[in-house]
Every structure is written in structure tokens, then in C-alpha cells.
Length: 439
Image (cartoon, rainbow, N blue to C red; front, top):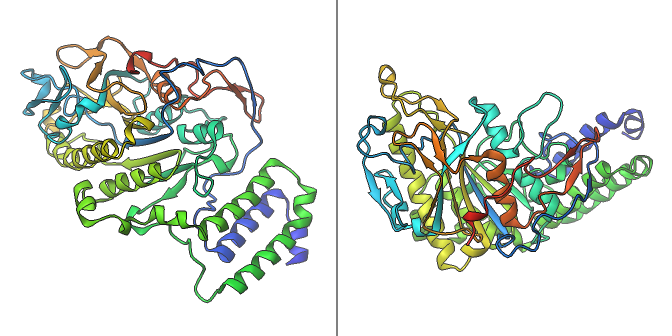
């Protein structure tokens, strides 16, 4: 093994160490999905409203992503009485002049906590490009991979709880997203099944504490000469991942990932499904100091059978989101926790009758929500026309939407970060936050 390690180049050595980590530690959080990249550096270009009292109140963000493209007309921008609305009725809510569709009876009682943004507009109408744009604020390019919002927030703000990761993603696929040109340590810790806890966080079968310590000592000795020779931020960051992983294995903070600590009544209230339990896990993480938690809810690509599928998807979202907002509010956590409901684009106002009343991709106009973290409650921002086809007032671009999230967290939006190719990037490209959304 000694001779083999000497013969490896940096990339081969990295893969070898990753494999050793899995076999020695049994830890899923040392993922090879996000490649180690060149080092990014930061340079200040002037603070952006860093002392503005309306920003910086959100210590944590719970980012709920409706993958596939959520219909705005069938959710939070209903147009009752129009042909584009179809057979779906509208409900009045606890928010002034805000309606939701009949699929959201629980959220109708929580809209006094929410700002509805009915004027999103994207330049991307395909799924991969739309997801990438929504998560990063940048268009997908062939040469540069940009950090997503969670990685940016981890890079700029660091950890709240030193014993827990700063950035977590629950469910869905992380393909194409992550730390981008930042160091891999800023990418999200992926959790596939929220009910399974943090997988591979205990010692492998047959490995006691004494044997584990011996393996770790041997591993550090094996890596010693390599780390001295390649004393880079990448290699140091990877070594730090080992230390953090081992610390988490032995920490009481590991209970954060254990939903069995919640009562059956609470778990039932969120919904006994992956998204509902993911939202409950996200609440536990925000409560214990995780900076950014994304919960993915796929299946919104409703080219066919739109109304039946949105009814089913809406029921799951309605139960989980309403419970999350109510729970955060009753625990006094909503003011310091920003809840974001986002999707990559909307669906066409025109109903595709020949496809069992489906709706196609529609980036021209769609809806997203924000609640908590200093955001106004019971507030509607932006307006689409009477059929929901075009934004006619208060258009919000994707970079502006993301800048609003960053501003709520207190991130310096003008701070430039240099990629390994020495190109400057900022948190949300050229986006400016929508300050009217803040209380």
C-alpha cells in the first residue's frame, strides 16, 4: 500500500482516499459526487446594505423545491372564471387580497405568514437549465459550474452549530448542482430518506472503538507525507471532512437527524410521506442550527392529467407546508427562519386538451413563496394578466429572487469570489433584492 500511494497522481490519490474513507469510516457524507476543484478566493467590492435592518434576520433557510415546474394557476395565482383556470376553484385566505386554489385548504389558513410572488420570470424553459438557473442565479454553461444557494450561504456565512453541517439536501438528485467552483466542503450533505436518519453514521459491523482509532491513526500516518507535499486548500479541506465526520459520529447532535424523537401526532400532522417527513426533518435542523436545508418534492411535470396530478401533489405540499409554518411560528422560530417555496418555471395557461388536460413548460410567468426571516406576511407582490399569461406588474427575475434570499440571510451580495480561472462571481449575479418584501 505504501508503494501504491507513492505512485498515484493527485486525482488518483484523492479517489483512493475517498474509497478508504468509506471502508474505514462507513460514512456516506464523504461523497465523490462533487469533485474537488481549484481554490476560490474572495475580494470585497463594497458591502451591499450589510447594516440594512430589513436584511440579515434569517439564520436558517428551508428551501422547498417543487421539481418539474409547478403550475401557478393551479396553486397560488388562480384566475377564477377564466378558461385558463380550468375546473379548479379559488379559496380566500388569511392574507389580504390573496387567494389559493381549492387544493390548498390548510395553506389558506397560513397565508398571513406568507409573501406570494406572482411575477417570476425565467429565461430557461427546459428542466435541467431551469433547475440550475433557479438554484444558482446563473445560466448553465459548459465551462463553469456555479455554486448553488446552499453552497454560497455556507461559504459566506459558515456554520451556526459547529457539530452539524451548514448545508443539507433532503431527497431528489444533486446532479449538476453543489459546490461548483467552491471547495467541496461547501456542497450539501445529501440525505435520501428523511426517515432513515443519517446513514452510515455508526461504526461498521465488527469494528469497535479501539480498532476504529487504530485505523484512523494508520490513515493519518499514510496521508502525512502526501499532505506535506500537497499542502493545498483542497487537501486540507478533505482532511477536515474526516475530522468533522468523526466528530459528528460521536456527537449528541446526531439526534437531530432522528425523527423518532418526534411524537406520532407531529409526524402525522406533516404527512407520512417523504416530503412531509423531509419538512419535519428540516424544522429539526433549523432548530438545531443548520444554515441551509433544501427539501425536494418532484413530480410537478404535468404535461398530461394536470388537474389530477396537481390535486395529488398539492395535497402533500399543502399538509407539509402549512404544518411547517404553523410549527415554526408556534415555536418562535419563524422570524429567524426563511421558508422558500420555489420551482424551475410555471405551466402554460393554455390547457392541452389533447393530452388529457395537461400544461406545458412556461417560464414567462410563475409563482413562488417566501415566509419568515423578516419577510412580510399576508402580502402579494407582482401581478399577471387576467389569464395568467404575462407579468404586467413587478416582474421578478431569478437572480433578483435569489438576491432576496441572500439579503434575508445577511450575505454581502456585492462581494466578488474569484473562480479558479480568475473570473469574478457574486452570490446572485447582478440580481438586486426585492426590498418591498421585507417588513
